[in-house]
Image 1 (cartoon, rainbow, N blue to C red):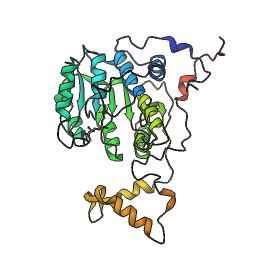
Image 2 (cartoon, rainbow, N blue to C red):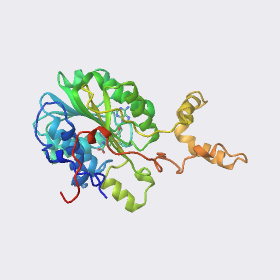
Image 3 (cartoon, helix red, strand yellow):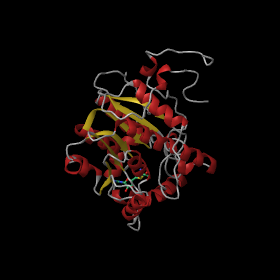
Image 4 (tube, protein in one colour):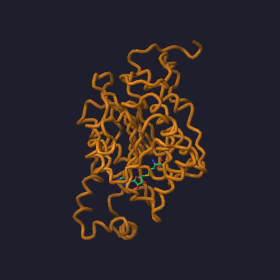
Length: 333
Ligand SMILES: C[S@@+](CC[C@H](N)C(=O)[O-])C[C@H]1O[C@@H](n2cnc3c(N)ncnc32)[C@H](O)[C@@H]1O
């Protein structure tokens, strides 16, 4: 069943593809989300492979068509081989768009930047600029790359640790337009949801308007579920808007009251080989599982890696303010 359920929202009929620099109203935001739900983007994965879902790409394109112009740009953190960046670039060919990546992950042979360039040539894309840098360094001095233009649409898909997620949100604030939209990929992860929540609660000008999660990371899915993730919201999504006029009420992603996983960061940072943790974590897991007295089982991950802690989330998809001033009608109307 559609996540819009039986609620027929009269204001869904607006055109989310008009190009303007106006405050984002509920109607336009909802229409961009509805359009993504109902029309996931067709992607030719032979030309544009990568890590994203068809609904996310559609959502980015819908918001880009609405927001991006010569006074409000699109910026993403985490380009990889350009699936999301180039999809957006092709949607707004008259406007410059920007992607930050230092090619630190998933690029063993150092080929990703040249793959992006080849794809740009193949797709005749001339309006995408790659900022080849660490995202924090780039965001601290973003105007060096983007000049005077502010960011109207911001997509976060870089490193997913708690601190990086929080910094991706904190550092962008001076560069955002008044009614910017922020889309956070990989929000299935507990630590990403926690960083989003911490940001929202301490920056009340920003509101979560939409969220959607799946039970596991696509890597831990069956083949059929992975196909669903690829044609859907990939590894979970949060949509946040800057809301200076307070048209939305506070709405937060679900997190856990137990913060043990986060306080454990301290033990990793202060351990004898903190930088080797990734390499040796499997051995640590193995030793722990062989011990007679097992470590706290309630915080044991279900999978060997990519644990999201999202399998029993209860949540509403939409900020309740969407429904506060609309007319509810029956299906037959
Ligand atoms: C999941 S991939 C992005 C997927 C991409 N949006 C797509 O469409 O396929 C994450 C990217 O973040 C980049 N990244 C990781 N840490 C980074 C950092 N500190 N600064 C900039 N980019 C970083 C990685 O190099 C990687 O290409």
